[in-house]
Length: 297
Length: 238
Image 1 (cartoon, each protein chain N blue to C red):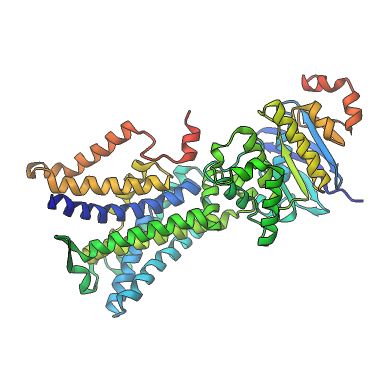
Image 2 (image 1 turned 180 degrees about the horizontal axis):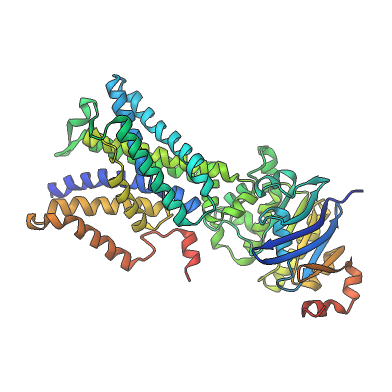
């Protein structure tokens, strides 16, 4: 029983990180139909900011906001430089553009910083653990779960109550009509990228605080997982992205914990088979985007 | 007095298809003008071109004396012109309140937004009743009211209405036409696309008749009502 609770905590921490990443992908996809594979490099940027801040002796309470701000600005710059010129191009063109951006950034990290993994200095408190009701929980896990909860609530309030959040949802549903209301395309897309950068930044802080290192390809795997989570949840659906992130987190953690050791090497394919099975049962994902539903007859 | 809206040699093309082939028209302040014609005559294309939803290929659009031909759609509501588009296109995943809030997106003054919202609720009490409901759960008639209400939120001087009666029950159609007259009495100029010719000519002052992307007739609504070649135009045999 304790083991299940313990693994649930782990799954919430990992799933929450996937959920934040998947949300970042979904926010951009819902508005401009772009699957931004350079999302992972936004994470990597945040990771390097944490690394340099650690080397410079900047306190964690200051380096975290910086590590979140940097990918926000980077995401907006990415949109301005790389994605705006192809905004009205096909989905495939935008996808390839995002791969190009990802590769350029990876090469820059390799050549300007280091091709190898670099340690990140983190506060000691993060590697300690606390005991709650007989469970031993790593502070970093607790931090991840709390950060995820705060982010999800803040995002929900922004999307539901704030004029600009509502405008983003309106633009995701019917971009042409949203513009007819006076919602500026450039503003709303730029804001979507800033939001996705913010989410990538928070996810990166959580990711790095589990591993204490950063390398040029750091963002690739988690964003691939987040992409799977976004599809699992229903591409373009924000609630779906959260659901998909947590489901994927649970699948991964529970397979790692409870699969017999002889099967452990097949953990990833078994996990992905479960994802495929869910998609066979719910082809549009767990919580499909409303606009997608409308198109499907 | 100079017209509120003026089109000069207005052409609109989708790829190889020329939907509107050079039309001229004028709408004066305070008028209700109907744009009639069969399916595919180019009526909706004209509306979309004026509102900036589709790019104008050639010619000019003047609103209140200013050239708005090249203005992107997001700049147009600020100038006082708006469109309630064909097929209603309310934001189904937003509440009625939020739809109205988006209609007023270009308006900075909060007191004016509250006043417009109250005005819309006075016109359509059912929207006040359902203000917290998602627009996607409303009936067709209610969605049409919301589409018109949303358009009114930016205090337009000219309201373009594209097929406001399409797909509505006859009783609701009558309500919509009554509402259009009411709006004009409140000082909004109306340019209206309609398939319901009889209904449109009853409330309109003037009308233009389109076929194959061109204007084939224009005149007072009374004269149009009396003419026999209306049905001919609808059958496409002009």
